[in-house]
Length: 499
Image (cartoon, rainbow, N blue to C red; front, side):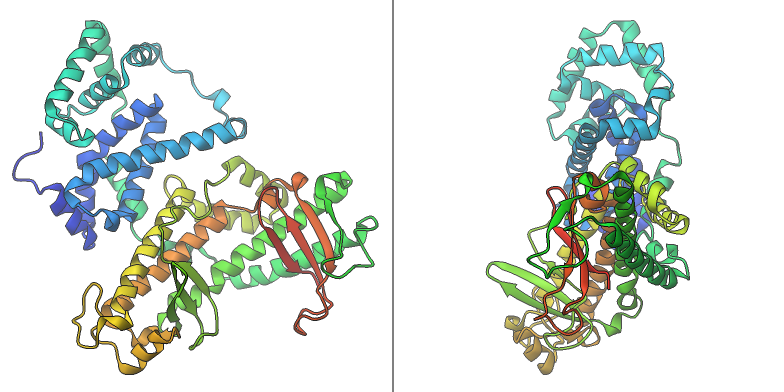
């Protein structure tokens, strides 16, 4: 039972939102075993339950500003943990064979006899009774605390516990209690979570080696050379002489000779790696020198967008993002780690594979899920910034949510016309929000690129390739030059020049 002199959940949430990491650490300590117990109830495995708990808290930290009622933190955290489990289960269902091959699951030590007895006994209980009993024994939570976490009445918890104990023999109940004691979370669990979220995005930039620009340029040259070599071995009519875009034939890569297929896969990998580094490093100047950034908001039908640019007006482009609805994970569920590891092992230069490993190692839990959390938080921040910059809010409105106090006449005029304004000219609160959002957007982009290789790379045998010439009516930089175009199974295309 929590002492009455301890801060309430809503007090801790408010403090954590203000940057008090100790307050978030208290929330972790308060609910860590509750989430761990829920994880064991859902998975039946202590190690998986620990991973689930850590990922749930990382997501909760990133999404904390989305919690509308801080006093309902417990129920909100329970939903996050349940969603994490669903995502993990989908990944296991889709990639069971690949995961087992990668992790050596067949070589894992078998569960103890006690563990088997306990799990079989718990599985015979109804799910609500099993969960109540698990939470009661995982850390001796009181019936009131369990009721608060589950969102039910205390009497309901009392009834479920009584029924559970009636169905289990006395010796089995003792075994359940002993098993949870043996698999208790370590004291450093809070430190692991807090350390995992502290400075998360800022560490991405420091993980990039000093020679990253040279590596990016080298990959661009290597990928073009690799495609030229592939093109020189392509059988007719897929090789030279090349036809213009719209007339060039495409071929399924799996139908090519095995040696040529391997060459294509290597060229694909080099293309993906160059694209990842170009996106990662290309936006760093605006992260490191925020005053060089321009931003504008515009609408299209019922949708609103934020546009980041490197020049004023309505030109220039770095990135654009939808302000809603919240996208969750724009990249969807990441593929099994084994698939990406296989590509890197076969095709990637060692220094690039090491870089990807460093970026992935920065994120506890599942990077793909965190990419979605970062992106969703970025959308929320940009919506709030849009409220501070609304031209319709009135010149005399005070600074605050939905107001524009501090906007100069030129900035107000530019915003009303849908043109970009410099981040240097934004009101203090809007500037702070946009700065945070840009940083989160970059972090989300890095994670998505690392964890979501294109399907044409992962499933090259089912992908298709086309070599051709850019149409001659294009701008001079591209007209008549060679390109390669890739189609992944069930995905959009990718096109790049190989001139």
